[in-house]
Image (cartoon, rainbow, N blue to C red; front, side):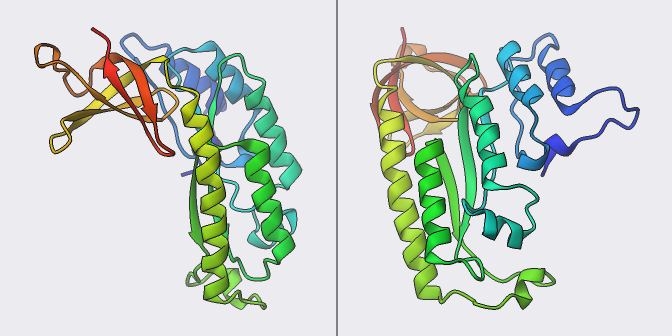
Length: 240
């Protein structure tokens, strides 16, 4: 999954150069990649997204925890500050880059202070999406032998607190798109709702309506006026 850990067998191209080369191919409208490991995420990837319009302005950068102490226990090979340095690169980009992540709560030994550091990270980064989970034991992993397992009830509490906080962040971030015209790639139609489903370059789902005379085709690109928002999606009308 760590696509940015790519190494050219011939030693000629970095992952960022590979992205740019693919994005420059004739007929390529969008290039999206996932996932990125923070350890191997370089500034050159941000520069590639800035310079090549076909590269989607979205990066999924799993953090797993906002605590350096927990990251060390997870053997993630980066610190909180090193992760935030990569976020700063993206925030400073000429194109706005949407950032999403993965977070695990209740890792063995995670203290309340560690958990609070993860909550603070949500405020610092302002992710557009977070895939969050309770820690669960996995066979043949070092964490199986770690002491101080977190009770399941406490893991559930922490997950609920984190998800509620992130829901409010996403509500604010999605709301700011209302009134904008955004291009989507049409993915299909929700027949029950009578809405088409599209996805923006920055990986937001935009459900929209279209007139009977101008029904889109899956795989096509359409301009949509955003008329409303939810914490996980946008709604709009196809521009006529």
